[in-house]
Length: 265
Image (cartoon, rainbow, N blue to C red; front, top):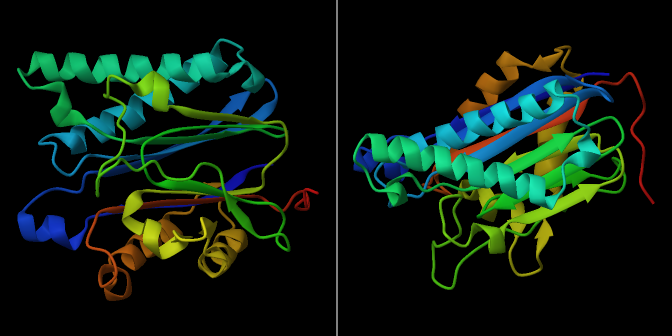
C-alpha cells in the first residue's frame, strides 16, 4: 500500500499587490512505521498581519515532520499519539519558533501561524488542528465527504488561533479515528468559502468529487509532481483568484488501488 499525493501552496493576489510573500506552507511525508506505511501531512497558514509569518509557517511544518519522524523512528505507534502528545508537539514547535524569533531580535507574534495535521496509518488516523482551514475525509466514494474539525474563527472577522498563542492548550482540537481512511484533503482558509458551506456547516461535495479522480488515476508512489504543478496552476487561475485573494494551500491524498476503498457504516 502506498499513497498518491498532489500538493500545492499558491500566493494570493492581495499578497502580490501588497508585495508580500506567500505565507502558506504545505508539507507531507511517507514514513515506515511498525504498523506499515504512514502518511503525515500538514498545512500551515501564516497570519496576514505578522511580519515574518511565512517563516513561522515553514518552521511549523518542518518541525512537525521532524517530531513525527522521531516518534516512529523510536518505535512509537500511531495509537500512542494522544492529545497530550499532540499538545507536546505543538508546544515544542511554538518554543522552536520563539527561539528563532529571539535569535533575530523579533517578536514571536510576528511568526504566528495555524497548523492542521493528519497522520494516517493502515488501520487508524490521528488529526489535530490549531486555527482555521480544514481537513475533509472520504467515507467511501458513495458516502461523500465530511470535515474533521470546523475552522476556528475568532469573535472578529479574519481572526483565528495560532500555534504561538498563549492559549494553544485550550484551542487545540484532537481526534483519534480507529479506522482506515482512504482519502483526505487538507486546505488553508484561502479556499474555505469555495469548498465549505458556512451556513449549513457542510462540505461542498462537487469540489472534491471533481479534484480527486486525477489523483486516483496517478501512477505515482507518493507525490505526483505533474499533478502538483497542475494543482498550483489551478490555485493561481482566474477562476479561483476571482473568488479569493488570499494565499491558498491544498493537499489531496488517496491510497493506491491495491486494496478496495471501504465504505464506513
